[in-house]
Length: 260
Image (cartoon, rainbow, N blue to C red; front, side, top):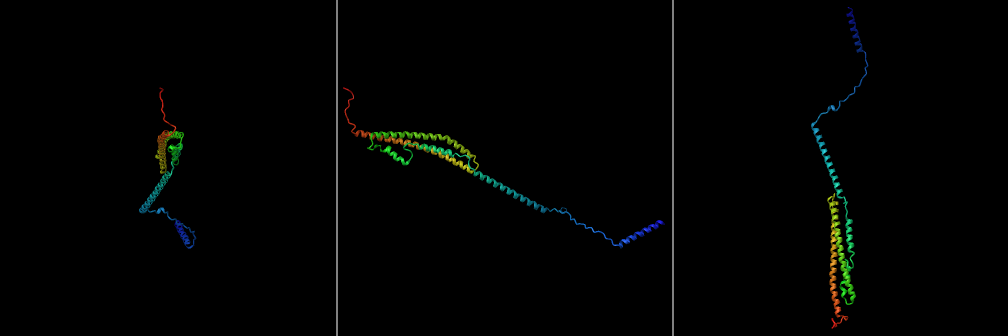
């Protein structure tokens, strides 16, 4: 009986507490719970069409970059080639060629009396080869003129030999210069070097032609003076013979070759 009374008493107490809790106001704290959005990657959706378009755009951009790189490489090579074309030839033989010209020219200037001056040739030639037969010249003057013409002829032949010797001595130097310029032309890195090598080769050829011209001029001068000397000697002999036969310095007389 006691246990039943205790149980009833406990139930009555519990109901009283519940009723008091309902009737009495209770203040509780309010807690703000923030809103946390879900991460974006958690919402990625794969779009095959968009992916293919992006991939095609990237490929086109890469192709444009490759084209630009190729264009820049071509421009750089063009500039390099232009620099090569403007590079001067390191080999220059103009001083040697001019030295050969000067040597031959100085030799030609050594010609005695009847040289290569057009203005003086006629005057000197008339005095030595044409006016010797004038009546106002004495026999000693005629002999002196003949000796002068002989000296001029011998000097002209000597001058001709010297010109030929200079031309022959220049052959070896010309060969060396030609070989050096041909090698420089073959190893030229640009148009300018090849052109300069070609110009110097033309200068070497001009020097050879000049040597040949000088040699032929010296030989022609020697031959012309010799022929003029021979013609003058014949004419002078005729003049002296005429003077001898028509002059009073000679009279015919009988001559006894042997004693009787």
